[in-house]
Image (cartoon, rainbow, N blue to C red; front, side, top):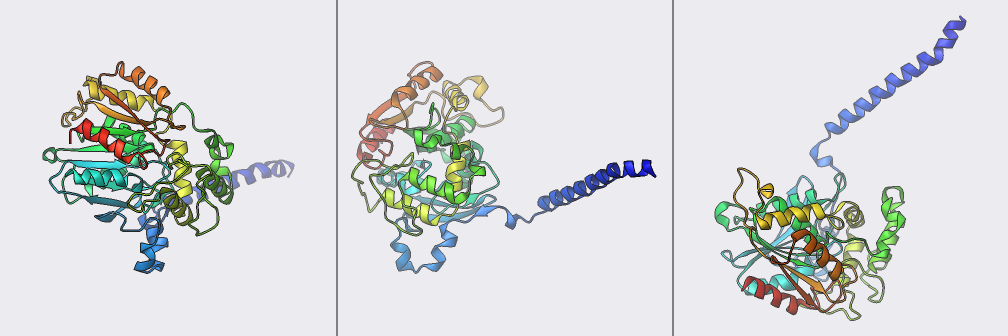
Length: 390
């Protein structure tokens, strides 16, 4: 009897272990067989806001759903994403990729000027921004954004990737720069040329406000508290469903921080950021996840691969794939003179270190802080025209 009593705890633990293992296996099996329509996705304002508005009300939004011509919503495994495409069908194809904080309209002024020059342009809202959904169960890293680019160009009625398509070029800003370099480094047979505006990827450190311990351990912090921190960081109000903004407050990585916000074609970037903060329920997750996993800092390996592609080194080629379109091609990089986020001197030093010299680098400077593509649009576009001789 004593030996049986002594053995009972062991037997009990063994039984509990078997039961728990069975429950875990059943849970894993349930997850594996989960229907595709139950994937963890936070819908964009296209699904949570627009259905409750009249057309007249939708037209008054800071970011109206028809902000650009050629809008389409592409359904994917990662959720729905917003893509705009317009311009002459036979024009040179240009993809424009925005930054971490702002959606597609940030690059609208440049896109419209390119169309006037006869180009076919495409703008997308990155995951969790604008009218694109937020995928919750996958890191917001270079791979996710590269897939988004491939899905966007594949959704076109025109050929953007075929051998006879002529390929496409990229204009990318801030986070979009890091995304584009990584994409071009791995798919050089798709990309003709790249223009980088204050590109992320080689940042040595984040701005002080981004170093909060709560951002590093965001999974452990209540979402309401994180939302307040993100709102303070971006300089938006935390009042639900308001479009007011404080132009003198803090700003996000790519929000124009000039004391007077310039409006071009009714473009008010701070108001769009406020709208996005108010109405996109997945924005804060995508924003923080991109800071954690996105191509913002210490991406030397991708930039080195990108350099190898341009120099035509064998290590950068993919046997069986079409030849690289980027070999011996120069890269235009434009910095803001007073940019406090992307340090022109530091990034230029790292570029020279990676490329070995500057023969393939065309570096220009324009006035303004990190959000210079809007207030300095004309100067930026002039550099693009000179670079592409259009």
